[in-house]
Image (tube, rainbow, N blue to C red; front, side):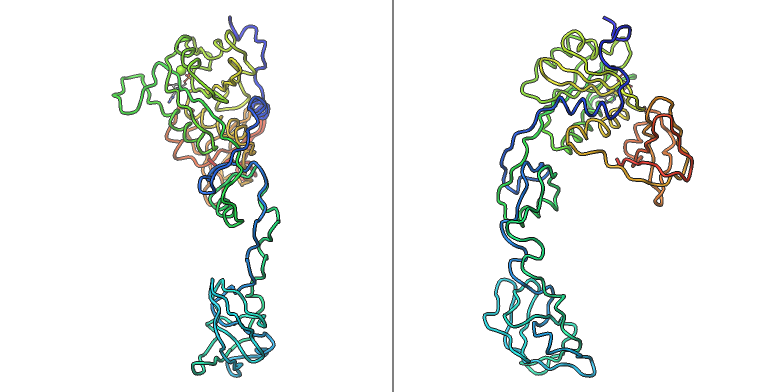
Length: 399
Ligand code: AMP
Ligand code: MG
């Protein structure tokens, strides 16, 4: 069967269509509970409300004294206010009494404000006046009092469902008082690289062979997306080897393959899906990465990335990652420092670097330039039929 002669599946879909079609084949993920210490990189399945208020009491933002603002009005270096010290409040150990007129207590950052006091004078503005009194050289400020619940109040919904738990967000979840978190089950992605010439790093390399860099890079990118990776290793370029690898998969949500999706005689992925399963699309109107393939086999969605490492990286970034995570591709608008050519019927993702707030052509745009995986920090997006002159504003994807 020749797919190119009589395809009964869409060809040359747009990047957005490819993304939507892949996302539509992925399952809704059930909720599971993990300890807050295990939540890094996971996605919240339900919104999180604060179980407590923060601050949990009205407290001082500074080290200094707590007093009545009215007692220090007009205080200056030449005419300091004189206040009697009657105690202290430190973090975790509040002052039990009340601060009266003309009185103050020593207070430290995060310590509860005592009754009667409404302002803070920082330690830098104080001069000791014997063991039990201080001189205050500037008016004490209510702005340095943090009100109870000023950050969040108990019961307030603070984190929405769908939020990816980055390190700071995980810290916030703990501060809200949650010991366990409702997160989405991880998507299980089986990963297979293909190609007779592809071998493991560490083996001697014969002329014409290449180390399997895709499996390593893609596995790390899947981890970054919060997926569980089922490593299938590598399969030779034969329908039998591919079929055996795919048949060995148990319990995955997606099979991600690299290589064997182009026009060559030894590119078997597409025809295998035509015969054994189905093809949802083949080829995307983009460069690099045009030959990408989506299909299914025995109910398992299969996404075929081109083998070329540059192409597979770009397709992963702009199609696979957003489909897996539900997060749109993050782009910045930047000024182009160099020109970027356009392509009549494809969106181009040119490797580039950000230099002094402008985006510059990386130069070698061949898909085989592997060092660009490390050296180019961004992709400049040139829409179909468009072009970019130096000085134009462009969309930029950070790598
Ligand atoms: P293919 O898509 O199979 O036609 O491969 C395109 C190019 O990518 C060829 O030069 C391959 O040698 C190279 N390639 C394929 N798979 C990998 C891989 N896993 N790691 C590195 N390069 C690869
Ligand atoms: Mg190949």
